Image (cartoon, rainbow, N blue to C red; front, side, top):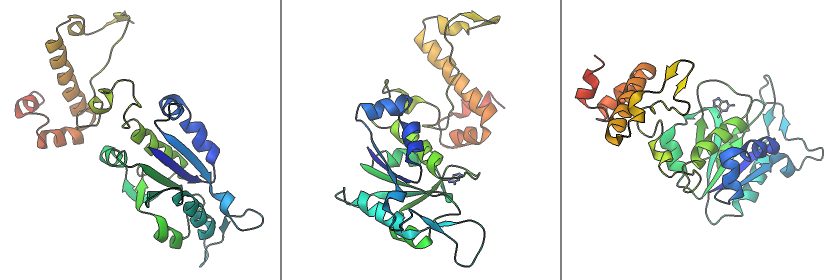
Length: 242
Ligand code: 6GU
């Protein structure tokens, strides 16, 4: 997986991504990351990349020229046109199915805007996907790009230790993950559920499934309904909660 991030704050991307699991994946060359500074591509002699909006209004607009030339420099390294994801609160909302789809790509380009936005004409020319990470407004696209790269990276083969965990965890389906316990057996007068100490793997699996269903019902009733509709939860399992 090769990520190219077009940004005015490349160090923010590098510092964020070179940490923890994604950092290890980069060190092991399972993931390649280039944070490309859009400012390096401006032809303006003082390094300016923004200007006032035509028609007036608050704030500044990132100009088309440096964004386009930055994109062209990235595209030149590839055999085919990559998907170019523009991070914007006006995009479709990122969720696990989109992460799965994007994890199949060889190259992904992320375009991070700042100020009041980017000149529409260059967006029309290069962007293939408009993506938001949720209904709130952030100051720029860098954190959303990192959120997406984190979610996608853990689906790249070899990035997680345990190949089970990418599929099993919360959200691959509509059920939330069951609670987890570790040592000691009693902490703050609270005991670990007895069944987990029994060594009976069938009973443990049944218990965990029950707890997954309960947790989904209590915390995410919207997902619980989806899980019933998709058949992930049976009518019999649903009855327990009525
Ligand atoms: Cl992708 N960008 C910005 N600036 N704010 C956001 C967002 C993206 N997603 C949610 N809020």
